[in-house]
Length: 77
Image 1 (cartoon, rainbow, N blue to C red):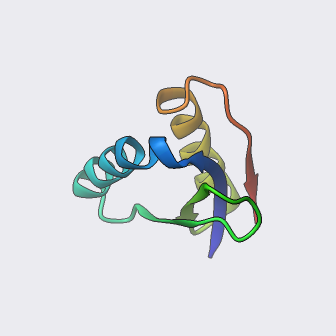
Image 2 (image 1 turned 90 degrees about the horizontal axis):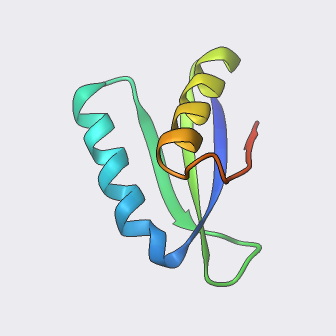
Image 3 (image 1 turned 45 degrees about the vertical axis):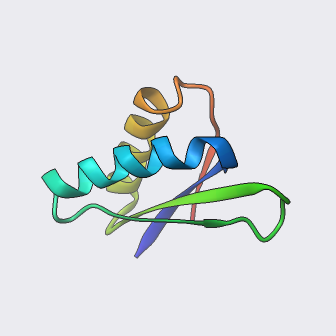
């Protein structure tokens, strides 16, 4: 399973969590996790999972555009 990773500020977590929860309610295949970053103090990571590279990129691009206003980098692993 592939994943897209976003770095999220602590104050953004509740808003992002609500949006991800709403997406999950509409799409059973949508899987995500939000956790504390191991590398940056006070930061969190949003991990969005997918079955193939295209699916992960589509989901990450949508999230970057709609949630973060196209002002965020992400990584696919």
